[in-house]
Length: 293
Image (cartoon, rainbow, N blue to C red; front, side, top):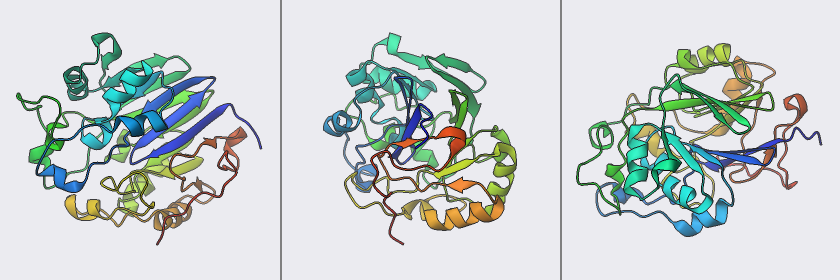
């Protein structure tokens, strides 16, 4: 196997971990996955045990926006690892509410350039998809918000995307709903639930060699539940999203961009990017788990 010195793993939902030269960068780590009914009743707490099980080290944590499935577990990751966190204003406020020291919190905005050890990061503007409950989960944080928080306390003010470069390899994480806000990259991590026209434009701009679908698994399903496509986002987004079947997405990308590889990653398993982004295999040698049709 060709060893590039850069490895990554999909953490589930929008989560990503990249390790290069002994440095570790996380994006949107989320493991707790509270049930859907917590949207309407009760308060939630991070499952610290799951964080301890799946995050051993981190130097920096990037957060795209403040919705719970992106930001909820970040305070515990930062407490446990001593990492610094980088995100929009609401993300920073949530970290403050959770008692994270100011020195570990950094507010960022589109256009910023970050040098995080072995990682160079370009912060990009991103447009988040609309939902029928935007009025409940977007906007300013509630003035009365205090831990333990409600899921509806995790309100988005700004949404970002990240172009991460390490060892000459560029990862574009979660590009905007507006594909024209994307940048060229070697590895594209994107949700598989948009119309073909979106990917046609995105692929022409990004020109990736490897595409990895993310944010297609059930964000309300426990982490140890079988890995199956999440169809709840197909009906609670507006306009309605496509059915989030990664195999269908793979066929679409292969049709739109012949020669571009699509990796349906196994959740929580390490992959080496490989020299020249050659064949990508799980580092533990096991065949990647395929979601059930």
